[in-house]
Length: 71
Image (cartoon, rainbow, N blue to C red):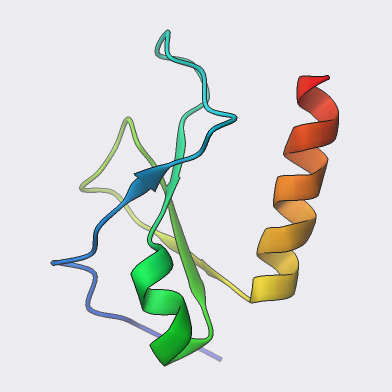
């Protein structure tokens, strides 16, 4: 299944687990979740690049994994 969202005006939020030194930086657009039931995610170092669209459960699993790795 292929789904596209207009993310041109999305307000991206940097993950609290992203490093501030140019390392692994993940951003997500929470404003799109209620209307699409998808979580847009992108690499903050490449804002013009592609975004992944994740189901909320997949995003929650990713965040839990990142939190565990940050410990």
